Amino acid sequence: MIFFLSLYGVESINCREDITKELLLGHIRYEYDPRFVRISSSYTSFSKRKLYLRKEAYQSFQKMYSSAKKQGIQLHILSGARNFDSQKRIWERKWYGNTLVQGLKLNQAYPRPMKRALIILRYSAMPGLSRHHWGTEIDLNSLENSYWKKGKGLKEYRWLTKNADRFGFCRPYNQKGRDAQNSRITGYEEERWHWSFRPLSQKMTKSFLKHIHYSDLTGFAGSSIAKKLRVIPHYAGSIASSCL
Image (tube, rainbow, N blue to C red; front, side, top):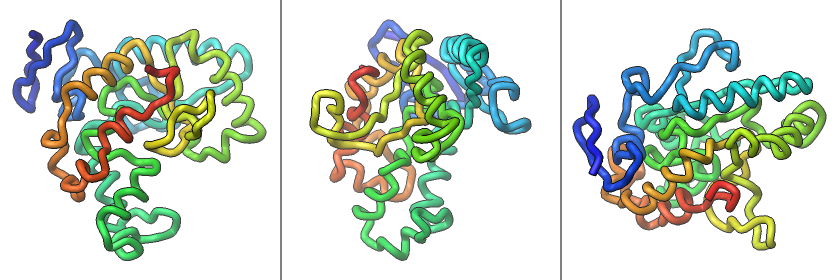
């Protein structure tokens, strides 16, 4: 049994790794946690924004960055670790119509909570459900799939699909489908920019699916419908086989 003390209290999970419910749900302050490190601005597109990753993921990214740069490929981190409060802001801004989605204020276009949640869940996780909570995930270069399908973006994407695995990174949200290459039929839409540090995230995924329950997904608008949507198996559990 492992215990971890933080600003949010004490949680424990039976496992060999320091994986707690707090970490899985994003109830954590990365700047005070020695497992996390701040990302240098030289690896991001932001000079003042504070971004964090797990140390192991960051070290592997630095190696991947250097290897890519030698081959004329430039990688920039747009997003790293994101705690519950940050994810809540993203989710609720869309929920209440403060952030437009497909040019729409979702609270007006979709007054029924179930439909509104499904629209948001195409690309944004409910607070507590995001893999970004763990510090193992990075978003690179552009948050638009179209960027990665031509020109410079396609070149970068091809390099990543060929080389990222050598540095421990996999892409959790591949294209959904029912053929041999695309085993995902539920969950988030394809995200070519999202890469996961598998040596850690694989363990996180297994712990999340085993230890997190719908009673843990609370404290944000729309949380009451999480169980009806079966978000744990359909979203948290729906990832590419290369990341399992």
